[in-house]
Length: 249
Ligand code: PEP
Image 1 (spheres, protein in one colour):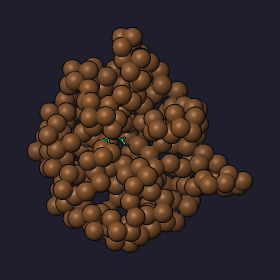
Image 2 (tube, rainbow, N blue to C red):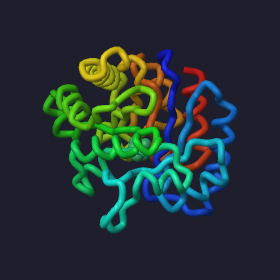
Image 3 (cartoon, helix red, strand yellow):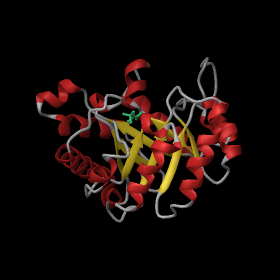
Image 4 (tube, rainbow, N blue to C red):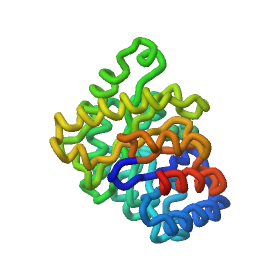
């Protein structure tokens, strides 16, 4: 782990009802006991308000935001709606949205911009398919995807990047520490080319089957500044060991 403050973020995806609020409170309590680590949970839109009420000092976020301020976009959620519900952050560009909702990198950049304007912190996701990984040019492809997805106002005080190899998400397959190291270095170099020295302050998280057993090894990689965690963030029992691994990294 570097001198950048680690961020451990949980992505609940389409999981979580009010019955899960006890897990959120337990995770928030562990976050409060870990002042050197930032912890956040990105919950379904329907759970943002009750979660923010149950854990008022904790960072609750949304999993997507529309790129427009308001209007005829049935089923979508605006940045102002997220803020009003109690969200302090949002994820943009998750591979599941890039694939299922066909979101382009231009759209992802516009979403990040809109969220920033509303005062939300943002985690912007990038990552390669297995075909790209096997072709041997993953660093080049993901660096290009990052540059295309970056909004003009990108800066370390509101934006973090999550590198998530698509083939490692929810599969139990984790990238090797060597591959993670090479990718995070490449992404930081790409960021330097766009935002200059501020790139050294911007957090780059790893995501893809992080759990209590592998977290310490992943967080020990120099350019890894925390994790974006799906399945293992759904219960305090699984998520707390990951927070603890970041605390001692
Ligand atoms: C994710 O949802 O971003 C993710 C990395 O999921 P998992 O940890 O389950 O692979």
